[in-house]
Length: 126
Image (cartoon, rainbow, N blue to C red):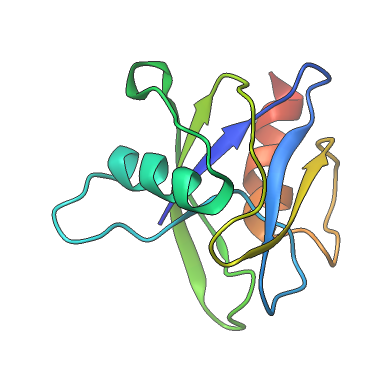
């Protein structure tokens, strides 16, 4: 799975809530056959929020393993990238809601574990 961190001028992180789910997560998804992790991230962000990312500005934040947000008992392994802020057109495809969240400490029932256990701690420490 690939996901992208996009922060606004206040340091808040773009998150999305997919249709039929309760937790906010980074935009992203599974790679299609033959796609690299970065290519999947770029495609998924475009599909989910309509933004066109510049591959040259994509920076790896590593690969993180956390509990899956919407599948109890499963582990998510995500290649996480960061991209500089850009205009976000809005929710598209299977996305019901877009929300900008300030990085927080600890688990929150409406925020995916990838954010609370890996990405937010990484952002808060830098």
